[in-house]
Image 1 (cartoon, helix red, strand yellow):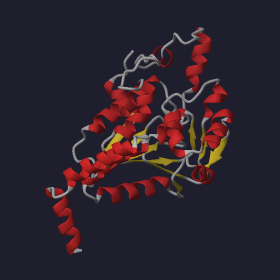
Image 2 (cartoon, helix red, strand yellow):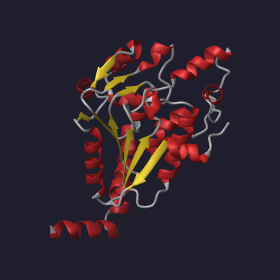
Image 3 (tube, helix red, strand yellow):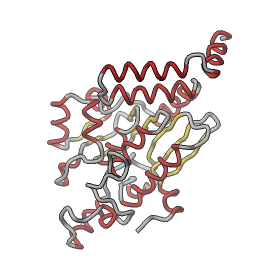
Length: 279
């Protein structure tokens, strides 16, 4: 069953300010923004809208209510047990009440739907900063990992929680955490499912920094990004995605040259230089 357009828009809200910063809010506060099929649909729809949103310069990703995201909705597992739907043949849509998603099917390039819910933030043309508070568990943590930066309240609780439910991280978390964490640290978090708080998350690499008001800090960071040349910022994100995804040095060097070839001497670059010289 496909979630209605109205319900999708309500579950993930997008507000674009005059400076081109979009505040994207997971909006299921009564369930701590827990993920079910409808939330997956809503996040994918929001990412699709942001891809072509006019004037977009940066994105702030946050959660309404007491938490950023508590991970997969516990009701999902309760329904599985109650209905006797166990085993790999049951797709996510049948389990969770949203669009059917078969995990082995590549529906978004190299990814399935739940993986795209995370990778979609990386593939947006502008930087994304996540403001983390409350709990950031399991799938919620993996969504946060899709952002370029993560700013967390010191009391935020983060966990690679999948092992507690007899599962493994499967929403691109493994691909993204290997960029951020040492191998032994990653193994520790995945094998134990232990919680870490904001300061430890920063020390380990799960979060970028802490702030007493992560949303305000994230919005200030996004506003600073939005003041720079949109053309240069978008080029920088493309280039960083190539470099940090493990491309061979020769490919990174060529990507640098291609991006700079387009930027250097362009109308926007010349206007940026003139404005800076005036200051």
